[in-house]
Length: 83
Image (cartoon, rainbow, N blue to C red; front, side, top):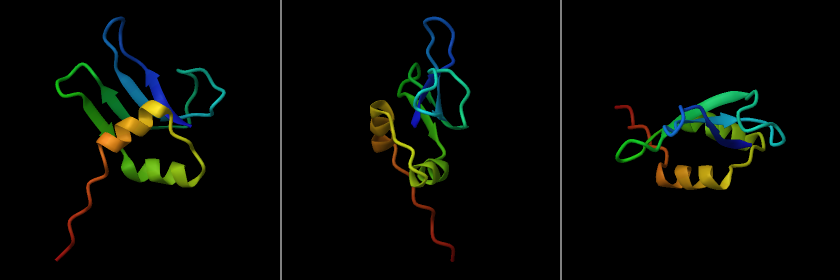
């Protein structure tokens, strides 16, 4: 599953976007970190590794509902064509 893992201090949320087994704890041992999310900036800062997310989705990883919204708001930017 691809979901958020909170790593920020108290009342200062900061999240890692992780690939983790569905039955593990929220901040348990993850397989891979595929991005970060900082809701405290204006606008919220989202850094995604789209190629790794696509890889894990191809392996059968599901998105949490929150992650589905974040990815929909921050689609992958197409690479410019080489001349």
